[in-house]
Image (tube, rainbow, N blue to C red):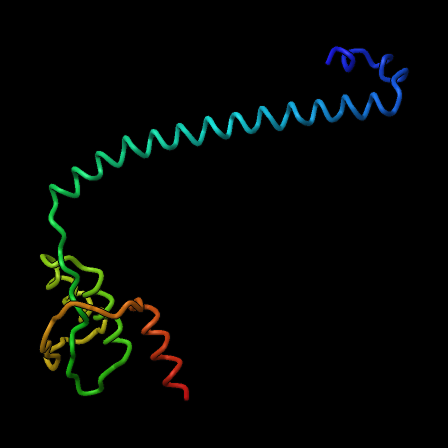
Length: 143
């Protein structure tokens, strides 16, 4: 390594010596980088263990809320966009604030909602997200 400190020595070195020293510098740099990455990997693993313990105790303290299913709506026009908004709102809400979410979806429709009747609320079993269902409905409507 001290060979690189003096530029006049570089002029006297052969191509083979320069290549060998260059490979040495490359291996040293890659080795240091690898060791730092291994250190980061272990430190992230330790942090994951520390914070997963905290998360597990929080999950035990808070019981899981069931996810509500899309509501069946009867309106005069059966607006597909309204149905998608209500379905998304119900699927995203917690059980305790489901009424507020439904009221917000009705308010987004800009109507009183007097003709809207929610017949049932049930758990969603479809693995397709609500936004994908909405996109599928819009694409199928074009056909």
